Image 1 (cartoon, one colour):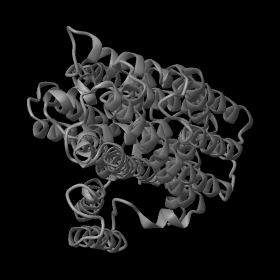
Image 2 (cartoon, helix red, strand yellow):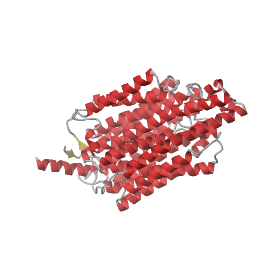
Image 3 (cartoon, one colour):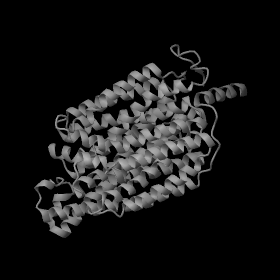
Image 4 (cartoon, helix red, strand yellow):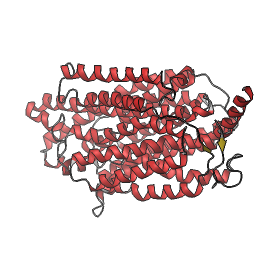
Length: 527
């Protein structure tokens, strides 16, 4: 593999390391793009009750408005990562942002639930490219030893985008002259700004080599993951967990994934190179990423519903209530990144982050309809602190452990599995929440009332309920939400077990591009 500077690159852009100023300029465009891509997954959280009411949706649709975007993002991340190892990273990022703009415009103008779900798929494809490629470009520009300084900022952007989304969405919904449609349209100007910034500031050497995209692998992975996620969302609503449909979809999904593994082991340019899992670090960070995704997305995406349904807060106030988690994540991510850069040690932050995240999950499993805001804020700050130390540094550990020519594949694998964990968490725990709410309401108010609060029927309009029924509904949603965190706590603990067994390796002192050139020169010398 050879690397040559693109004709438009500034002097030294391809031959040497980018200066701190050049890196910051390029990161400005990446961070704007990353922020809006992540925001797309969560900005609808506080808007969902309003969207569902206006478009006549159900609790299942509530889950799927989040899940479809996560699913599309998850399924396409490996493809984006593979293309980044073959083609212009700059062009691919701009293409992904363009797709995101198209999806956002369709979503903002949607008049039916079906069109909204299609638009979320398009948004997810674009967001998948941005989330994978931003991390790949960072690794190409910056040595792992210095990456902590920037990764801490990037991790904070990722976390703030994940958790601030509900706040921004709540403000938009409560602003009469904007409304829920701007939860989607708000990303358009920022995406266009990111495209312009990247065109002006991002200068990377172009890598040109003949290769073929593993389309069969991409199709099989996407189909297998999608089948299992559709099953986990519909089981218990449209058909019983123990039913012929369950057997068909589970066996079919697993068969597709098994076939995907067979294809990936035989094609010359696999979407997910199985050989990277020979690295103990990559394997363990992948396992931890799945578990973090399940615990984080699966638990927190339903907090907004808890704030509004159980605590009776407005969308804006519900968004403001997420600030303690944002602050915890922002501070811990930034501080951990700076300390990693200074001392070159990273494993302790993974272990501490996973442990603190587990404690945060356990604390949130104690909430109910009467939990005070100060106590709830403390619990959320604990969870945010743990996630901030853990999430971005998992990527750093994996990137540091693979050859430069596999940086794209390794990064996309981690992003893929974290997103897949998130999609699984939202889908499965959403089904658990709906079933639990329906069961509680049926138990306390009778079979007819049970259909009011969950299942596939409409989410209740709290303003129309009499006071005694309202109290029962609020308590049912609070009980079900706390149980989601109780399920999430052992999942978070398994992530702690995984990171404990990761072997710490000194961080590289040169960037991914420089490592690629060194590896290419060594390969040439051998021949």
